[in-house]
Length: 95
Image (tube, rainbow, N blue to C red; front, side, top):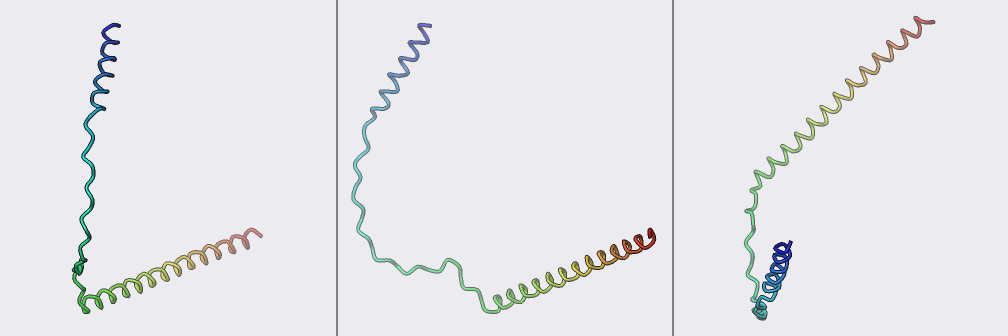
């Protein structure tokens, strides 16, 4: 038990020693501002041909998505119509 207390007390003293480290040097004033140099563009400008091709590809993708969506809607409507017909037939058969 004495060794444990001695270790704790020595740890406290060691912590106090490290806490009293020399302070940092005072900050120096900032350098005066320099005139801003014109910035170079981060990425080169895209040629017009590539931009047009990209726009066309986007348009085609949108058209394809729209066609697919309408085809899916038509298929769902057809399935619903078939189910409704079957339900009507079963109702007539049960009456």
